[in-house]
Image 1 (cartoon, rainbow, N blue to C red):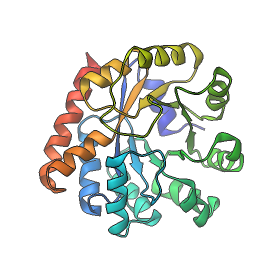
Image 2: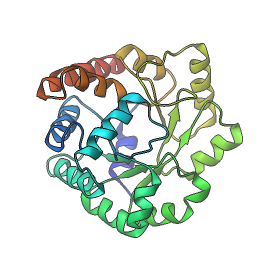
Image 3: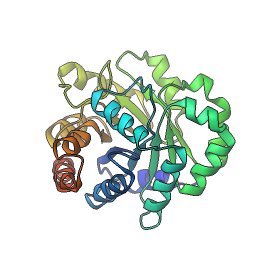
Image 4: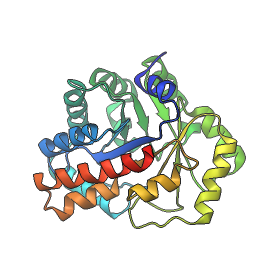
Length: 264
């Protein structure tokens, strides 16, 4: 089934993808919607919407904080679907949700996928659901044209990388560090070698995430990767501007600097 994600991947002609991550409901619903639209205006290729969760095991301090605030604001899965619908009303950009399995299980996989499809969501990342445990979800998501994306890490064996790629619908998410998300990570030759090796192992495109904080870091990872996810650095900008509309322009500026470096 053709999807917005597969159409993007087929048409990008070597373009490196920029995938901003923003938590739904952070710092509040209206501003999170404005931030999503600002990211789209800044030439994002896909948008990753974080589903806030109380125990986000893969997330570093910035994303944890955004989840906590979003939950305190009363953000639920229905809020996430409402946000996606609002974005979808004026944009055809692929939308991916990143969230943990517990809320999805509590809602029920069929109901979750029905709502996700109705809201115009194109893909799912569920960090605490390994592919081996996701057989039913993958099959149901595929029927609805929703992509499933799984994570490889520097500690993944070649066999593991191969099995994860097979489980991914369209592309693979490469975690760049053996840790949690965060803009304080630095990349070294080991990171370069890890991504270069992935390039030789994967047939599907892959995006690199965790630690992207600037155009320079994005450009470095995209020597091998097909794109980058940038999240914690955006939350840092929002925090440093008082969780107010004053953070919109700095977020635009950061994303445009990343876009400019990727397009060189």
